[in-house]
Every structure is written in structure tokens, then in C-alpha cells.
Image (cartoon, rainbow, N blue to C red):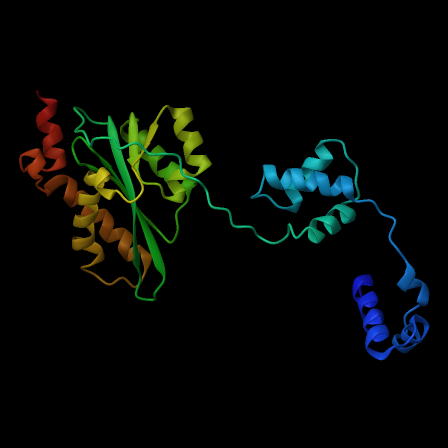
Amino acid sequence: MVASGDRNNIIAYLKEAHKVSVTKACKATGFNKSMFYYKSVKDDSLVIAKLTELSEQKPNRGFPNYFNRIRNEGIVWNKKRVKRVYNKMNLNLRRKRKRRLPTRIKQPLFAPLESNKSWSMDFMHDCLMSGRKVRVLNIIDDYNRQALSIDVDYSHSGASVKRAIQRIIDEQGKPDEIRCDNGPEFLSHELADYCKATGIILKYIQPGKPTQNAYIERFNRSYREDVLDAYLFEEIEQLRNLSWKWLLDYNQNHPHQSLKNMSPLNFIKQNQHI
């Protein structure tokens, strides 16, 4: 089946290129002459206005969301009609929009005076021997430099970050704040809503200033030297198992100059008796 627009274009081309009448052009193509002169009487202005409004309000949503919103407003337009106008407006083409970051204020990197005052988190990247990429979410306590979590997976999201934080909270309590960069997982609405609901302050560093998150950056360096750069991994489970063993050894035995060369757990034990 040929669309009406294409049909009319063919007939118009034959008229101009071969200097023939509409009647002869229609006979040559097998189209009915009345089809050429037919003009649609449909008025889609209201549909266009509504879809324009929705696309501006919810630019990352698609047709199902828009149509259901229209129905929830009590408008009973035919679904095929709305879909036709939606496609005609090219709303079915994915639109990339840059998100404007709010201004980040430079804040000094202070040393907390007790556990669970401030945590730091960051992502690291590596590859398995197959070439498949993996991502590692690291979370530490800024006070005692304890490694709270090393989550290895093929990908992460705001939801996986939320789950990791909640798992730590279930084990040892909630922090007052968490310092992080401006990665999409940390900017996600799901993580922001979760932290707001639980009373956790997300402290974002300035873009391109990793030194403002120096505690986790130093931790990342040790982890990369001892694990990611030291071994080749065939499977992700190998990386997970070694990361878990490394985390235990790091917390129990790794000497920190900032902790008077004590390990995180020894530092915690000593300060519990003060």
C-alpha cells in the first residue's frame, strides 16, 4: 500500500517531468483520480497541542505514558489517532537532552570525629578477559577508613547504589552524609528520593575535582594496585570473591598513616575504649 503523500508525489512528478495531465498520470500508475484531489478534513490541532505539552513536561517519556495521561484526564481520543499524530511529530525519535548540573560549592575535606558521620562512595571500571566491562561501587567510612562495601557488577544504577547503602545501614547504622561525584547513578531520582526519605545528605563534589573526594580516591588506588591491576579475571565471580577477601584483609590489616599506622578495625577497637 502506498501512502497518500507518496501517491500524490508520484502523480505530481509525472505531471511535471512528462507534461501529462492528472488523468493520464493516474491511469499510468493505476491510482484513482479522486485520490489525488482528496483533502483530509481531520483537525488534529488539539492532539498536537496536548502532545507538545506532554513532551515538554516529560521529555524522557514515550507514547504509552503520554496516551495514559491523556486518558486519565478524561480525553477519549482514539489510540490509533494519537499514535499517528505522535509519529507525525517525530516524537518517536529519541531525543538526547543534556542535564544542567546545579552549582557545586567547594567544601573542605574534613575529618569526622566518629563513625557514620560521613561516608564516601565512587565507581571504578575494569574488564574481564573476554573484554566485557565491569563496574565496581566502593563505599568507605571517612572517619576510620573502613571499607564498607565493594560491589562488583556488569552495570550499576541508582537502584543498585540504594540497595548497597541500605545493606550497610542494616549492618551498622545510617550516616549523616555521603560524599560522591556527579555520576548519573548518584544523580538519579531514585537515589535522591531515598536519601531524602532516610535523612541522608548527598554532598556532591565539584565536577572535575576528584581531590575533593580524596578519601575514596586513595582507597581506589590501593584496590586497583592490589586487585584490578594485579590479576586477570575470566569470570565476574572471580573478581567478586577476590574483592571480598581483599576487603577483609584491608579492614583488618592495612596500616593507615592517618590512623597512626593502625588498620581500620584496630583503630575502631582502640577508640571504643577511649
